Amino acid sequence: MDTPFFELRGIDKYFSRVIANKDVSFAINQGEVLALLGENGAGKSTCMKILYGLYRADNGHIYKNGKEIHISSPRDAMKHRISMIQQHFSLVYAHTVTENIILGAKHGSINWKQEHEQIRQLATSYGFHIDPTKKIRDLSVGEQQKVEILKALYLDAHLLIMDEPTAVLTPQETDSLMAFVRTFVGKGNSVIFITHKLAEVMQVADRIIIMRNGMVHGDVLRSTTNAKDLSNMMIGHELSVPNVDSVAEVQDEILRLEHVTLQAGKEVPSLEDLSFSVHAGEIFGIAGVSGNGQQELCDVLCGRSSVSQGNIFLDSADITHASIKHRIDLGLGYVPSDRQRFGMVMDMSLSENLMLRQSFDGHWTRYGFIRKKELDERMQELIDSFSVKAPGPEVVARSLSGGNQQKVIVAREVSGKSQVVIFDQPTRGLDLGAINHVHQTILAQRKEGKAILLISTELSEIFALSDRIAVLYKGKIQGVYPRGTLSTERIGLLMAGYREDATHER
Image 1 (cartoon, rainbow, N blue to C red):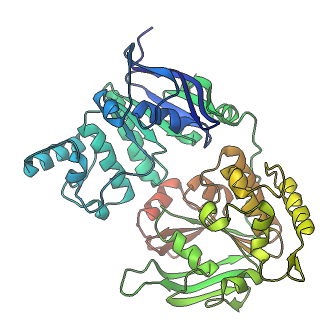
Image 2 (image 1 turned 180 degrees about the vertical axis):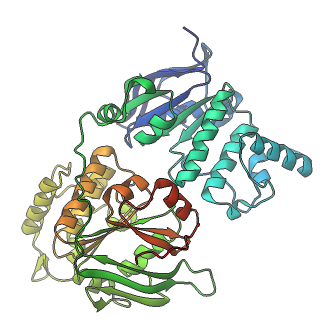
Image 3 (image 1 turned 60 degrees about the vertical axis):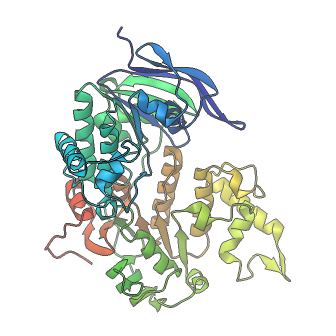
């Protein structure tokens, strides 16, 4: 058997009493794409940060071409031709492409003409069309990722670690990235592709390592497995597939936006002339690359921001200038994208977090005192019905996993008298089990006749759940499309800014 290019043996990593990695061992060969597959918290990124020198292992060894090496910093990793592209780019937005790529690698006098030309040639050799003189702030997210890749190529990386690299890309940009990966390994290099997306694994990997609870639970060839088997290995059991009706019956209009614009002074509007409606018993999906007005749309709907122009109606009542409390009283539920910042008070108990939604109406108080017994009983009912893994209603929210925190927020927002529920990135950072539970809850709310606004950057989620789909680009609606009328290629073009001339339903 050939000697592996790089190999990890018996890697252990602990954070206090939490086991992040336990006896992790696997290898990658030259010219191979190795997918590191697992749920969030499975230990994928931790062991790769050990390989890249961002963390130090508590136990274990790393080998290159059969010889043990010691990596205690990213500088050590780069000496061994290892580079890592993390989920959040490390680019200086005020600098040019060239300045970002050579940052830290060049000293003294710099021949800018020569550097520009070298980077242009490097980019062209991998099919990248990047202007070396452009500022990072003027590039799209996909182009910024290519700059991160060029940084690694400039340093002559032979092993490239890519952590969730498609999280902010359009389908076309994802295809371009996959083409680069195949070209890169075709030259004898290697790629470790960290992801929780089964479709990407089946598209690009040669071999797949499955991790669960910090340990390796499988090492399989892509050609010998399938998405269902990988899913079972990831979570340890089968998942039920959401049962979505073909088309929702048209019912009463519950939420309507008319020519809504959000603009600060003379700046470019973050939302511009948005008009659409959501009906009872309907899931209205909003697709788009992150940062195109999704958060601003949620802010104007929940009352956190005031619109500059236009009107918002909830069940025929004009709530354009209504308070957050009044919107909640009218039946608006909101599951925010950042659950720890906007969804919960992390040092409060689960019961206290449940009370937050109704803290002004006296529902859970009597003579100025909290009806603690009744509140705890109600929270326990929700813990049971929403399968929240928690010791009880008095446990502090911070002690729960992200998936269970999300379940608590969803339970609070859909219970009671909500007519409309806004789900903003409801499965971000969740594992497959928690994702499945959230999806089933959304579908159950649709069946109960609630109007659902689903905002997600996950196209698979939008396609699977939505009755109608709107595409948001730079704060504008590119069109509204019934279920089944958009292909992945078509929606990718819309997400990238292409606007069709055809008239669409609004």
